[in-house]
Image (cartoon, rainbow, N blue to C red):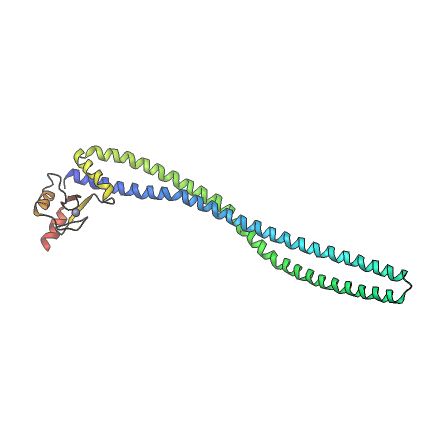
Length: 243
Ligand SMILES: [Zn+2]
C-alpha cells in the first residue's frame, strides 16, 4: 500500500478517537450539573419534609392551647356556679360546662389524630434525610470522578494532538488538505476502501479509471461521486477476483 495512504488511515483512526474523546469531554459538564441538581433536589425534598413536620407540631400546640383555654373557661363557670344563688343560673352554667367539655374532647380527638400523623411522618422524614445525605456524599465522589475523567481525557487529547502533527508531517500535503476538507462533511470517513468495485463511503460503483488509480497507488485516487479518497489493498484485489 502507498505509504501516504497508510499514514492517512492512521490519521483517520487518530481523528476518530479524538472525536470520540471530545464528545465525551463535552458530556462531562452537563453530567456535573445534573449531579449537583440531583443533590439540591433531594435537599429541597428534605427541607419540605422538615417544614411539614414543623407545621404539624404548630397545629398540635395550637390545639393544646385551645384545650387549656377551655379548661380555664370551665374553672370560671364553676366559680360562677359557686357564687350564684339562683338555681336557673346554676343550671345554665352547668350546661355551658357540659358544652365546653364536649368541645374539649373533640379537640383532644383531633390532637390524637395529629399525633398519629406525626408518628407516621417520622419515617418519611428519616427517608428524606437518608436520601439527601447519600446524594450529598455521592455528589462529592461523582464530581471528583468526573474531574479526574476530564483531566485524563484532556491529557489524552493533548497526546493525540502531538501524534497528529507527527503523522501529518509524513504525508503528502495535498493529500492531507484533501483529507481535512472531507473530514468535516463525511462524518469522519474521508478515506475509504474499495468495496467490491464500489466506494466504501457512498457505495456507488466506481469507474474503472478510479479503481486503476487506487490499485496503482501512485496518485491520489478519489470517488467521483462523493469525493472521498479511496484505497486498494491486496486483500481487496483477492476478494474482487473471487467474485
Ligand atoms: Zn464515494
